[in-house]
Image 1: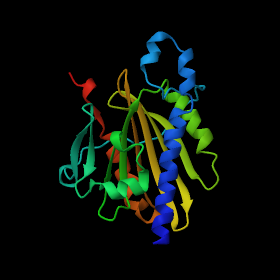
Image 2: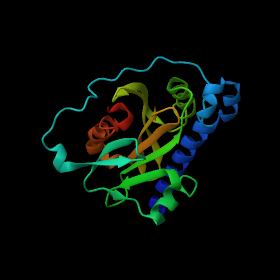
Image 3: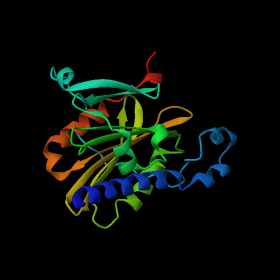
Image 4: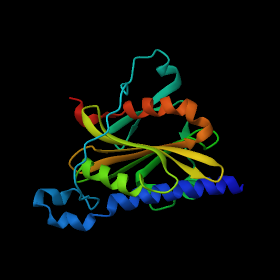
Length: 222
C-alpha cells in the first residue's frame, strides 16, 4: 500500500509540474500583439533551442495494429490509438492520482492494474513549442533523480510536437514518462503523458512510440 501511495504521489507531482510550467508565463501574454491575446493564458516566453534528433520514430505498417489498438476520438479535433485492453480511469482513481483541477479537460486511459497510463489534456494554445522545450529542460532535465532525459521537436501529422522522455526515482523503483505537447489550432493545444513503472519499460518503450505517432488531427484532414 505504501508503494502504491508513493508512486501515485509522484504522478501527482509530475502532473502538477506540467500544469505549473505551462502556466508560468501567463502574465507575459499581455506583451504580445493583439492577435496573440486569444491564445489563452498558458503562453510561454523563452528562447529557441535546437531539437535533439531522434531516429526511426515513424509508425510502420503492421497487420497486428488493428488487433492490439483501437482509435479513439477526443475533444472534437484529435484521434489516437489506445491499447484495446485499456479503459477510462474511474473517477476515484483519477482524483487520487491527478486531483480535481484538471478533471474537466483531461482524459486518462489505464491498464487493468492502473500501472500504465495515457493521460491527455486539452489546453489553451502555447506561444511557442520551442520556448516550452527550454522550460522543461530547465525544470525537469536538471531535477535530482531524473535520468535518461531527452527532448525533441517531432513532426506528427504535419504538426510540431514537443516530445520529452525521462525516468525518475520512486521508492518502489523508477517511473518512466513520455510527455508530448502540440498547438492544435489557434485556440487549443494538446498535452499528454504516458507513464509506467520500470518493469514495464521493455514493452512500453515501443508501445509509447506507437501511441504518440498515431495522433491524427482533424483540422489537417480536408
